Image (cartoon, rainbow, N blue to C red; front, side, top):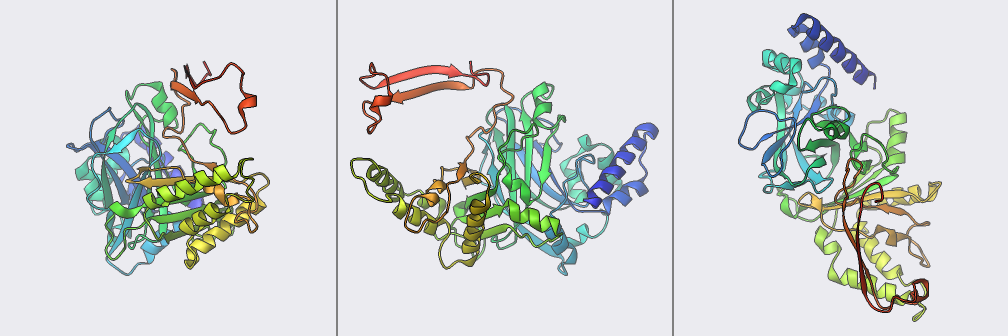
Length: 446
């Protein structure tokens, strides 16, 4: 924390001096440059060279995650996680490799095509000294709007690129999960928010914390964010379960099954309080099947049968216990120690929570949400329940925030069936056949 404050004060001083004197001393910039390693995420047209500050609908853009000795935006540096930073500094190798897993936080972006590679190759020497081209580095520090691909190449030690297409206007977010070279251990996490549409629109500044350009946050704790909301309002999250479908990621020597990760807020907070840097509270393991096979037809059929058995008609005891056990074994496979450690951490969190624990769940394929995981089944009534108490499962909608909309969100439709399993008495008597109720709603409830 002290280092971050130092960077901020130096950055403010440097910016103020530049504004007054219209010049930045290379020595001052070099002093700033050698103090850390930074993540930088920026966008340019897929066929262009220069950075863009906002995105237009249906155009192709190349997003580049760069690892560098300098922050491309001085006022908002995003440091590499301390654990990863230490590994990079202590490495005796000339190069290092990281695996990048993207996650779309909402439906505003889509892949133009699957990335050609999921790997970031890093030149270690470029992270242990000031950039070779200090003149270009200082040019970027003075004015981030001058960023180009040529300039980025001269100051970065590694990069990962992905081509995206904006599909709707408004706030958009993308997260990039950063793993070791085998793709089995998480090391860091970066989440970015930006505005798609006219850069002069006031909503763009609301979307990105008062700035018109892309806003960036980093660190493993950002995996606990429901969405990168700078205006608050997100519910507090006690833990987060991510399942990444790796069928499209080519990692040498690794079977293309899904990867799972659990992040526990209390354990991470305790580790930070004790100044530990061992990523305590972050668990990762490979599942025994792909993500689409978790929500298989047989598993869904089991849930439907359990729901039928839970009615008065059948009066079966503990109807959901079998599907709950099946879900536990799919997500936390027995015999995989990391998975069992994660399950133990989840149980502790549920047991110690003052209210029902809030658990964020993201199930992704090709970086986009691929289904809703019924994790709440783990608290189903059983002779030997998996979780002691019920949990609140948070699985964001395709658009997790409507806070900046000033028009109706979307038409809504309710289908009312003929019979509702003994619940008919709660409905008006004049509903005697399927009806469709239609209307519109807005953030104001209109």
